[in-house]
Image 1 (cartoon, rainbow, N blue to C red):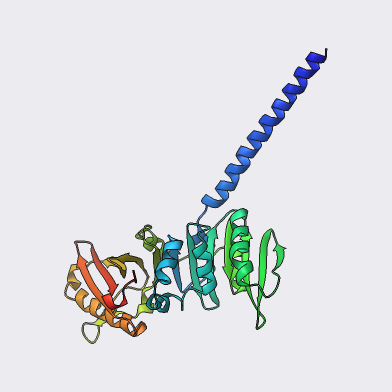
Image 2: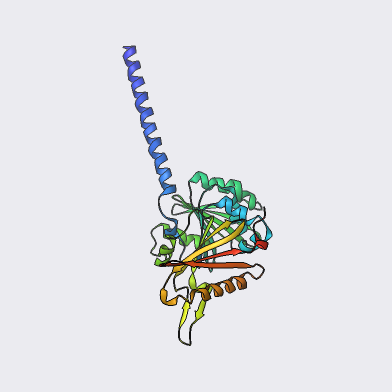
Length: 301
């Protein structure tokens, strides 16, 4: 009888272990689904002025911090705390959106990854005051106080981590994640298909912000279009370069070199302390523009 009871107990323990194993397996799968499913672009706060996709965070920070010239190019647009997060390499992909109210850094992350960013980066970076956490409709907001009555805020909910100096922007992120109606312009979706994901950084901006155009006559003006355009940022032969393309139209064949000249002038006006070299190529469908910093501004060895 004792042997029979022993067998029953062993059988029950085996069943319990099997149930726990199955539960753990599916829980792990669900946790992975949180981090790999979904699209960060669907939760971007409304009305961005520009987007950057960071495909290789550690390499990007290495490029930026390699010399003062690169820092001058990037640091006005990427807050230092964002660079500190990127440099830790906790998450392989980040997205930044730019708005009138400020910037938002996004990532798909597990709770463990969100905590790792908090303890390895943010608690050290903002060490004047203890962070404060609140939960609103299942979303966790963490506030890091900054002298001057300002806050740096992080957001975490259901596999999405975001951070910004603007709580209002993070509230928009929460609305989007819960099924908000805002959607990005279709031209952004078109540009996303062209991005080179092996490049450390991709930029997507409204073409009109570049203000690149060529006047053919009193009534005709050719520009880069009214939608959004992209650029891949990468290093080639120790030089920082960008690459983009626009549709080719044979009727404007003589205009594209003029657009290239105008684009180079715009870059020089945006960054007067740097020198750029620009070249373009074409095929039957596309015009390709490649811009590189001159050797004097190249990446330091």
